[in-house]
Image (cartoon, rainbow, N blue to C red; front, side, top):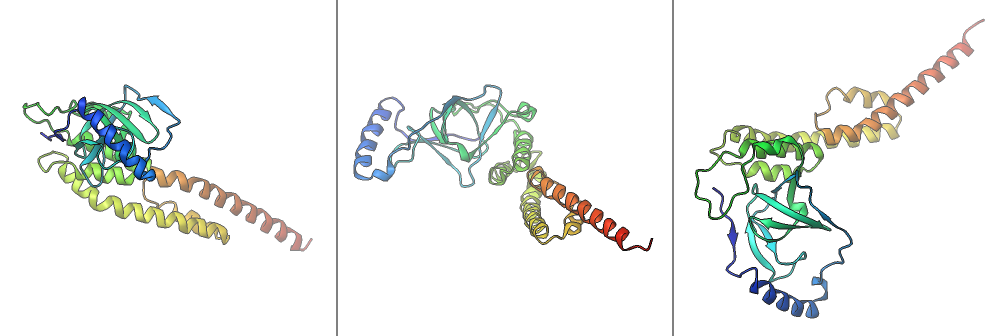
Length: 247
């Protein structure tokens, strides 16, 4: 069972002390002042959020901004959290600890993959651990195809060696970055080929293009443009051939 690391400071009186101390730092160091948050929205109750920090643990803060002394807890990658609302790039948690975490260090899924995950782990929970690896891997795959490769890799790295998904996770750690790089390079090569009028070069790459939804969606308009330009070229050549043919 993963443990939740929290500092000894309490969330009640501790928040007051941290707020006072933080205000002092903000006067001395203006760059630490929190940005104005324009948007605030409740988090969808049917969605599931996991910590996906590449360099865990992820800091939990008493306010939605970074300051030297507003850390009130830490969470390991792969842990499930309950989100109350989102403000800008910050998520307010109500479990397993109350506080704010940086949204870009998390992964949220609203698909059925969350059904195989365990309930939110509590620090006092002494029950036998449940294998959450398959669920974490499912969400990692989803994040990978959405284009969130850092979150996907972080989640895969968090899967325990005792999990039934461990071997597949190890393979993903090797293959995913390689396939991602190939897809990225081929996408930029296709764009370059379009600019140079090499339509067939673009179409020749389609069959061998890595099966990553994020990059395939970006490649689709490039392929459509190649097909359109190739058709125009064919029509122009046909007209020219007809004009040059003896009557």
